[in-house]
Image (cartoon, rainbow, N blue to C red; front, side, top):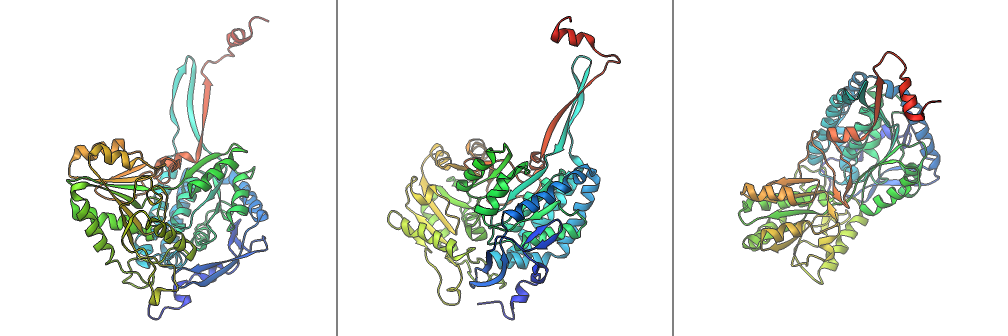
Length: 511
């Protein structure tokens, strides 16, 4: 049931700003040239809310050409000039915060309270961080490392960056892709997911309205097969940054290799949630439910595998199931909603397939079905807890990407850490204990790009996000991501006042 008094215009007030098309090239919206259209669907109702022309290869070529043309002047801008424009960018997004929050909720099914309190403020904070970082792009200090010569290192922008963002956090992923790249002096062509392009387009418009030059930020909205692969393989794109599944990441790497591009890959995750027997059980249960259900479980860092030491296992299962059953599903725009739908009916059916197959070898403690009544038209799925699955089973090893948590027991600390590491992924993890030595060991031995202690899911702009193993390589956010969008040049000066004729003799002998 919709929020009382809600109309399509209320839910998406910025629609008129996207009337001219879903391609943003050289500072203006245009229509795609593929000859095919695509509809953005409200996953809470199944209603189409925005229809647009998909990008074709010609649109990708035009966007790359615009980015290439804008690159020399943008790269030559001083750090202070780029910083000032990014600060203005943050202010424009802040002024339009409600439009961004509503558009993100509409296209993704996220509760409006989540987009208002997390997605949009987090994006504004990211812009502000990189506005400051733009003024701190430093090489290494000069030094004499080879007699009579002075060396130093320059960090320079790479060129045109082709980025591909996923559908689960379209606004924040657009920010994570665009901001470090342009702060360092690069220009960007971003392909958002065709399911969720609205906030990426509004983001690019806000950048232009803030004064960032035309061509610095471009958006092409098309399919991965046509627009995405053409962008990755484009000879004028110097770097590819991709966030998505590990399977598609392998394909991206294969295409990028042909033109020897720099690669940044943030791929799948299957985060373990490791609860030792001295943990605060209430805190762990609350953390597990929040960590598993954030964004309806459509989060690469979501808690998906809870390993609970045997003395706490039964109580953890009972209390987690009980807490999951109190979570309120509903209209994302209604104030009382805790959990919205998945992004699409296809994704809902994919999640349901994992759970249905698991019934043959595990116990579905709670959930495992779709709600009826007022929510039956939407892509809803109840919070689900599974127990009794084996470590090598599908629900433990594969990324489900839905509101599903699997719980397994362990006996010794050694076993718990070994189980936590026993998937191909290594994006994030958490460990729960009152013992500093146990948690210290967990941070050392769990193979993941982020390990939370007695918490699960928070991220901040100043610290890096990225994975180990099949979760990819490269970092988002933080100064580490900023440096990834630069290339290093060694510069060497001869300090002597005369030509070093002896160098010629050393290399070639007397002539």
